[in-house]
Amino acid sequence: MSVTIGIDLGGTRIKAVAIDTDGNVLYENYQQTNDGDDKAWKNAVAVAVKELQAILKIEKINIGLSAPGLPDEQNTAIACMPGRMQGLENFIWTDFLNQPTYVINDAVAAMMGEAKFGAAKNKKNVAMLTLGTGVGGAILIDGKPYQGSFNKAGHIGHMVIDHEGDCDVTGMPGSLEECIGNYTIQKRSKGKFTSTHEMLDAYRNGDSFAKEVWMKSVRQLAAALASVSNILSPEVIVLGGGITQAGAILFDPLKEYMDEFEWRPTGKGVEIVKAVYGDMAGAIGAACFAMSKQKDNK
Image: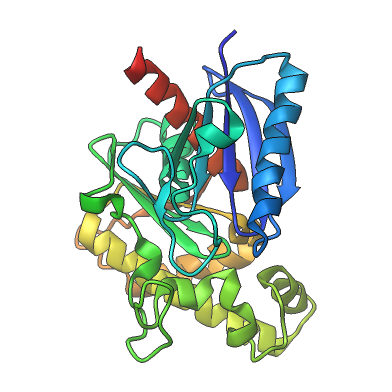
């Protein structure tokens, strides 16, 4: 049986999976990232790999690693990651892990997992957003991931929503990432909440301020998705990442706002679906990417 490890290096958690060629998840492993201490999260990745190798009883194994930022042309490292996760840029994972390791942007990885085995299976034109610490994005055109020049296509999170808003890590003012990414929740809630999860718990318990902050973010997300629909006209938009765990209190008002904003000249709107793999899509997609690179190298 051929097995591949996929790692998703997120701002909050490191998720690792071992999958077979049919996309079956054989084992999972979660670790805290501890962003701010690059030695800690690099070692956490190594521990996750070693634990999965021990369970699988495999000494040499191909690894796909998804991370925020733009990969280099050889997919050996993240070449550009401004503002966060110091120590990630130009770090060669193959040398560190002593295993063949292929690096890909986290949102593109999530798209690959959903396109091969998940919510976008058998779809040709798809957009995906990952809602988490920040907001990632990826595009599938004619069944293939579109990365564009410099590997930066699909960064929907850096779409401007409010041109008078604060700049995000790329310098874009009032971007979607600023509007709904978990890393701005303290600013958006005037210091009342430290995480989106905490705010949504308050919303469920009747906190009117939490509801106000959340509904503004969902409305801004809908404006962005309606714009994506106008620009790309995808069959489906897949939403993944930790914030989608909000469930109905995300998807129900989002549908209402899309009904308000989306241009539907034929009467049919874009389908918006939750990623099949939830917050594991990046890890699974990274493994899919490693599988494809292994085939290319044969």
